[in-house]
Image 1 (cartoon, rainbow, N blue to C red):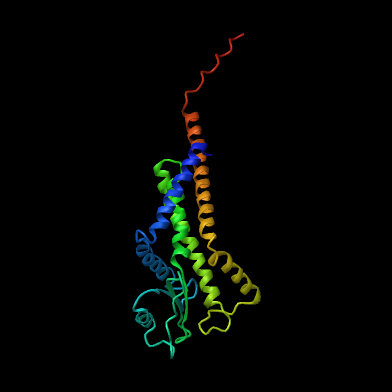
Image 2: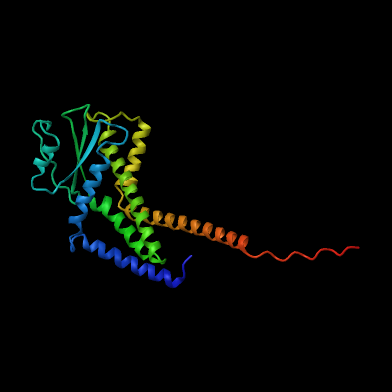
Length: 247
């Protein structure tokens, strides 16, 4: 599909861009821009948890100095007696508050890491999209579609995480349903593969990028075939053979 020279150039550019984005998380302060975006994305998409109108998930900065106040603002007058804010958990910088209006006073809490869950796959997609050996207009379209699909992947990860850690846990007061043994096992496996495995932060964007390039290639092939058909229909017709002489 691409010439060897283009492949080498792609590898060099993608590594450089990804390295800059990775180092920039701390050194350039990119985390200060991405963390609020990650929380806003979660708050908007999970303002209603899928088909359950009674369920909401709030994303809060777990490293904030006024964390207790922020949690209290989300759950005014609903904090359980003796409630304590969950302690620090390494890179897990985002506190998720799970709420079920049918079970007031029984929220769920757990943390996730914005860098691993969202920033890592986004950085991979940005790096390989900008390094793709095609014209710049096609690179930007690849980047745009890539970011859309990556955020779809992030949404799936968060959904599996929220279900497995809270809304689908038997015995939880705020649980939305009681899954059977088979569904519990499926959620557990999905959580291990999608939500709790950093490797997929790097693999999934690559597969999505390949899918985008495949779609573009198919589209280009159809366009070329259409152009060939149009050119053939518009080309001057060959002169008709002379009429047979009368006998």
